[in-house]
Length: 607
Ligand code: M6R
Figure: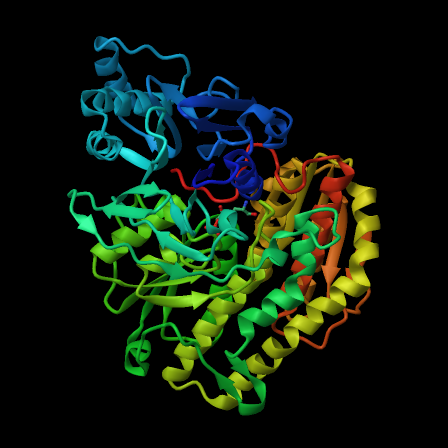
C-alpha cells in the first residue's frame, strides 16, 4: 500500500524515481510525488491521480539532480489530493511515508505549541514536522529520524532528505517494507524490490525497527536500540519480463494467461511424476514433526483466504486426523482464540506484506506455534519471519486482482497437505492420483485458456450491463464461488455475493429477480442433482443462470459453459480460469481501470 522510492548517486534522480514509481504504482495510485535536489534547491512535483501525471511536469532545469525521494499513494489520512500527496515538506525536511502514525494527533498538538502549522490532513506531515523539530537542534539527520521514531506509535516505512544535506537519504521501517539497493557509487531505495530491477540486484532488506543512512558510498544501519548493525547484502533474482505486459492489453489478462507457466514453476521439482515423488524443500520440519500435527490454522486475507479455504477442503479429504481452521487474518488478530496442542500455523500471502496476516504471524510466534509461509514475493516480511514454508514461484503479480497467485496458493497448500499426510502414513496408491492430476494441471489450464477464451468473452459482453450477481457452489466449489465473486466485484464494481448454493434459500434468495444473474459452479458428482435444484429455485424467481460445469448431462440454464477435462479432483481450478476471464472481460466492457481498480491497492500494509 503506497510505494516509496529514493536515490542518491550521480545520475538523473528524476528519471530513476519516476521509473521506480511507475513500477510501484500497483501498490497505490491516488496521488504521487517526487522531490529532487541540486545544491539544496528542491524541485517538488506532486499530482492527484496517477504517476503519469508527474511525467509531464519534469523539467530540464533539474536534470542534474542526483538525490531525491518519491511516493505513490493509497490514501489513509485525508482525501487523495495534491495537498495530501507525498513528499511532505516541513522546514528543512522532505519525507515520504507508507503506513499509519497512530498518535499523530497528540504529536500534532505538541508541535503546534512549538510553532508548527500544517497544511495537509495527513499523519505524514506531522511526522515530517517532528523530524524537522529535532533536526534543527544539531542538523544530524540520521539521529533526528531515529529520535523522532522513538516517539511514534504506528507502522511506517519512510525515506527522508534534508535540503541542506545533499549526501544522505535516511530510511526506516516498522511494519511496512523497505529495501535498499546497493550500486557502484549510488544507492537506491524502494518499498518493493521490483522497483530496483535493472538498477541493481544487490539488496539489503531492512528489518523492523532499523534505521539506515544511505549515501553514494554505502549504507549504515542501526537497530531500534541505536546499536550499529552490520547490513546483510543479498542477491535477488527478478525477471523484468514478468513485469511487462508481453503484448496483452492489461496485466490482469496477461497473468491469467501466465498460469500454465506460473503453476509449472510452483510444481517444478516438487511433483516428480515418474518417480511417484512429492517433496518440499523449505518446510524445515522432520517427518516426525509432520506426523505430530493435529491442528492447522491457515491464516490469510482476500483471495489468499479463499485459496486457503479451497485447499482445506482438499486436505480434509486425505488428512483425517487433522482439524483445519481457515481464518481471515483481520478477524483472528482480535479474537481470543485457543491454540490446541500440536498446532501449526500457515500464513498465505502473495505479497508477504499484508499487515493483518503479519500481525497474526507475530501473535502465533509469541505463543510458540510453529509458523510456515506460503508466499510469492521472495524476501518479503512473511517469508523472512516464518520458520519454514513454500515459495509459490508464480512470478511478479502486478495486477491488483490476484489470479495466478490464487491457483499456485491452492496447489502449494495441497502439496503441503499431501507431504504431511504421507508422513502420517498415506499410501503411495492414494497419493498417486493427486500426483497425476497436479502434473497434468498446467496443460489442462492451457487447454481451457485456449478453447474457452472467445466463448467467455462473448458471455461477458452479454452480462456486463447487470448490476447484481450471485456466485454459488457446493462443497469445494463454495470457496470458488467466494473467489469468483471477489474477482468480479473488485474489477467490475458490480454488486456480487458469493454463497454456498444450499444457503441461498435461508435468506438471500429474497433478493433474486430478473435484475440478477447467477454464476453456478457444478461438478459432475454426487452433488450434481442438489446443485440443479438450487439453480431451478433461482430461475423460478427470474434469475439468469450461467452454469460452469464439467458435466455433459442436460442442464436447463440460460447459459452453460462446459469444461472438458480428464481431471476429476482439480476441475475447480479450471472453472476458476473461466471465472477469472469472465471478470476480466466484464471489467473491460464496463470501461474500468482493470489493473488498478478504484479504492484498492495491491498489498494492504495498513490495518
Ligand atoms: O498479498 P496478499 O496475498 O496477502 O493479499 C491478500 C489480499 O489483500 C488480496 O488477495 C486481495 O484480496 C486482492 N485484491 C484479491 O484480488
